[in-house]
Image (cartoon, rainbow, N blue to C red; front, side, top):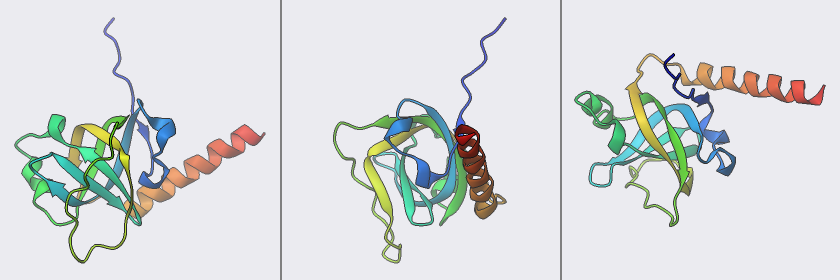
Length: 139
């Protein structure tokens, strides 16, 4: 019987932290900055950002999200901790302040442009899941 691939935990960008290092996660957000030389992108959700290494996930359709201003994407990959803080790609001059942990990077294995994804709904559903899981632990 073939092995099943490891599933990716859906998580809000604001909840990505050191406890998830070495885990496969799936996040959604808007690409606010991308550096084609380093392959690093910043995925934004509200006031929170996540560094994404795009090298493993680039294909002929990548230009759709890489060149579109604030493209909405769903990204799946393994979260890693960098030994040195990473350089954040140049952010647009009009960008709001964004909290980014420069030592955490999502090594993306898949980036899917998702223009119809409602990020508020995505976050709302995940927030309800978090609350449900917390209530199960308390009882």
